[in-house]
Image (cartoon, rainbow over all chains, first blue to last red; front, side, top):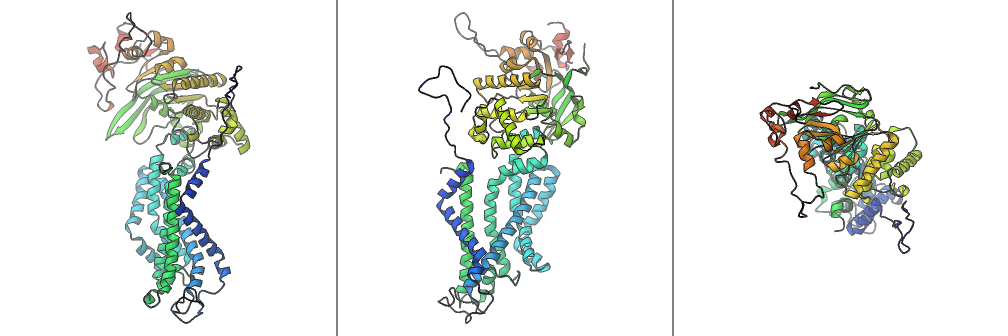
Length: 300
Length: 337
């Protein structure tokens, strides 16, 4: 509908704007994401993992620490994925480990991303001495080997699940910080940032509401990669026996069974495949999001 | 008569005195703006005209205290807006002045709107930030604002994103954003440079309408004399960071004094043919803007000036001819006008 209404209007054409339904941005993004088959596959698989994580202990009520079979029974009827060196069911372990693995992965990722974005945003936006100080701190964390650093933290404090999560986050946030800083440096020069300052927006609002949403696409992709990396870190820490002994995770299953790899391949292979699958799925999702959110890659 | 500084006129809504901006480049301090003086009355439009890099946009940013720092800083001068000393305000206070009392429209409507929010969202947030009203009434106000800047079907447009709109429409939305709080002073930094001529005319019409309705004072920054003659009551000509001439539109158009102003007017395109029916060769101003890093002594326009004399090796003062008419050129002293 337009306000334009001429008196002697052409009877064959309407001056009114044709009210075509324009594709809303998020819907277009969703469509592009779904058009990417591997990403959709990854997403559906993640749904299955989440389902198992939430309902696994109800559907498979057996205790993962209970000895149910002869040690190192090969996969078969009684124990689907075989049993480990103490006769514990590998399948039950994987199902129960899903929840812990996913909780650690998501919370550690959230904490990592939170620290990274905060540091990067402040450094990128304010620049000058604040940037200098924050970036020197970032570099300090960058030069330490993250796994060794995380091991030290867990060894010094305790192997409580919370400490494990924090140890992973504290040692790995630098990538996100650098990425966010670079995005902020780029976006803060944009006209719309100057424009919002000219109408009296405060720094806090400019950072959180103006620049951050525009900086999100690459950060979202970094987050999906981070989830996979976090799972691998947790597995590595578990492998070294540095995690909560009361909680079963996939990494721990691999770590405990590593001596039996040549005698009983199933004890390490199945948890390994689970880690592989979840990391792969998340990487596929990240790839799909990248394609869908990056306007330059659209319509390829 | 050599003026010290423009007298503080109580009629002025905005008074700028001796405004200077310096930039630090490679450890050297260079003068971007040199002692610029001017006043702005209520409901008046002042056009600031000059070449690229002459300090037009820097003047605008300085008025909002938004000179990019580092490397820039306002090294000298006073700015009074509504008798409020802008230079002495705290960061919090200046944020309250921006948008409410003085606001700005930017050159590039394509990049001056936030691409991730819908038009309505941006307007509503701006409204809510300045006024304590709920979202629904802010939405109504936003639609009303869009209607006032002549956006067709504002109810529909409000849910669209900047990338779905044309350049002219985005510029109207920029204007709507700047008008949220009815600022008394509106700075338009080349508001139509990125738009074509018909849209330019519409935008100027719109600005005039708003000015008549709200008694807004407008500072129009442009390099296009056509735009100035369309809009401005008074004109300030800038060159290399100096205000070199000021006067009413008629004075500047009909009796320019400074050789640079004459050159600018002379190089305007006109549909004028000679006896044989050919277009005359367009006159030009020789040379280009001086390098601000290596300023020569004397008049900044000297090297390009056709009427330069040895006198011009000395910096000319600003001669006040009364009634807001001033020229920075020795020609006035010689009585050649």
